[in-house]
Length: 168
Image 1 (spheres, rainbow, N blue to C red):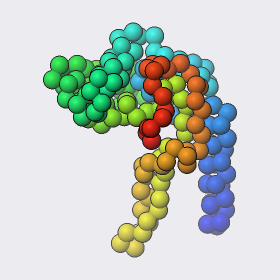
Image 2 (image 1 turned 30 degrees about the vertical axis):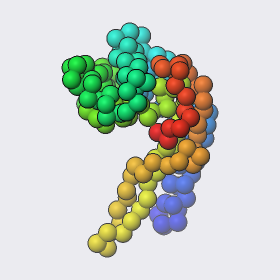
Image 3 (image 1 turned 120 degrees about the horizontal axis):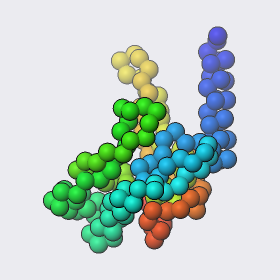
């Protein structure tokens, strides 16, 4: 295949992903605290402990107003947070561990917990390094540049949280 054909295939597949996201049907993984129902719907995890632990993170953030302070208070109180075991492919297994700073930050900045469906929050760019192509993934985009943002897509774990002021 020529490079042009490969570029066209890649562009078409990316557009197909965006179309599926606009139809609210694209879920690679579902955030802890939610479970996938059918092909295109997510609902809150039926495990009350999981929902309460995530709710506690948002309650502490409302009190402390700092991700770092929430992280430090959870660690000092030895409060474990749920996470999904990614090694157990095919089965959804919720495990518990003391949080890392990144865990708390990801919980507080993920729009799924406000009831929103978002796709295209991060991007990738290609750079040339030492004469070789390197793809850098993960730079966060501004919310206005997200491919899809559907507010009130599903029930929020923290109903009082809005997407105002977050770029997450």
